[in-house]
Amino acid sequence: MPATAKLSRAFYDRLGDNVANELADWLNQVDHSCRAELRELNELNFARFDARMGERMAELRADMQARFAALQIDLERRTQTLRTEIERCRSTTLRWMFAFWAPTMLAVLGLFLKR
Image (cartoon, rainbow, N blue to C red):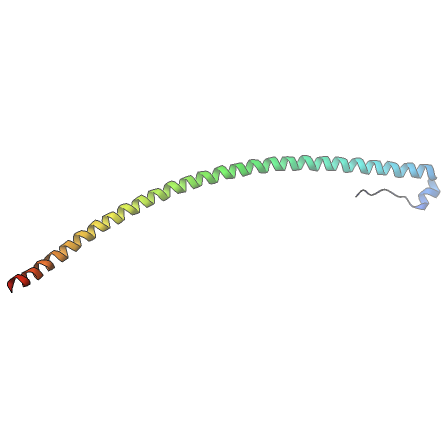
């Protein structure tokens, strides 16, 4: 919303209508050119900001992908370790089951055979 310069009646009375109008027009031209330069500077700064933000987003995306890949590798390694541990516990449990149940079954069979 451009603002146009208006001078007070005292300027017009002291300088005359032509000079005061010329001064107001010059002030409006300066204001317009400053606004145009400011707009252009803002657009350039935003373009630089946008480019920099795009670079940072790409870096962040690459970093996150690398971290997720490392996390996936670590998770797979831990899962394999856990599977190995579960298998070892399972085999140990089976051995203990036979160690306890075999004598029990022999004792029960011995009782039935004595009769």
